[in-house]
Amino acid sequence: MIEIFDDIRSLYQFKAPCPELKDHIEFFSETSAEATARFIDAEEFTVRLFPSYTPTIWINLGSPYRIKNGKQNKHIPRKTDILVLRDTTLERHNLITDHIFTVKFHPLGFESIFGFSQAKIGSDMVNVSEIIDPAILKKLKNMAGLEDRIVFLENWFIEKLHKNLRNQHDLRGIRLALDNHFQSGLEMKNYEIADQLCVSEKTFYRHFKNSMGTNPKTYFSITRARTALTAYKKDKSAFSPYDFGYYDFGHFSKDVVKFTGSLLSGF
Image (cartoon, rainbow, N blue to C red; front, side, top):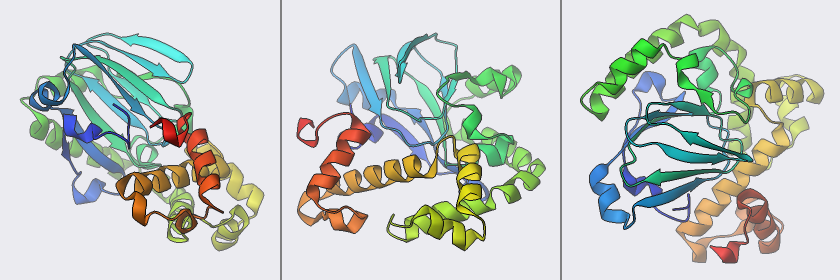
């Protein structure tokens, strides 16, 4: 299954975070065994996810799996939980008995809660036990289901968020830059964003890279390609590349290749 092109969400139960965490966490989810059995007619299957720079925690409640993260190809044992930045295309090779509890953060949301930059994750696959106490992970895994796990984690995240208020203030400028760029139709230039933030372009570039784990050009290019490709897949007849700042359809197609690694026609 391939993100955007296939309905990957059909395999999982999803839940939005509480209002206090909505600016920091995109969603919680957990594998639905019933849905997986209904949609997957094989003992093994693959899920491909494109770059997004959204830190993601995968708590393993089921079988071991294999993950390809850029050039890294690792076996993840049954009891191992990982954190990834999603700075490159990921492929998870799963057994039909796969069972994953997911916490997907918004860009900068991870730092707001945990107090250190998502840039430090980089292209690594970090063992979650390095950032969450193993006793908390054990309690989380022993809970009855998705709802109980979410309530437990939300309370823990909110407590950490309140202790990390100073760091949230430091991220305000980068959050504003992300919002302004999106509201501009994905067309604002770096110098325009820097002017709005009343800083030099060089200072904006440095702060952005230190917070996000990539430079503004790369991040905004990925965001534009992801947003445009999602709109194209949803309704090809209504899609216009000009709405996303592309010169023409050929410009959009080249960006898709850069984003997905494949020709648009290949999907």
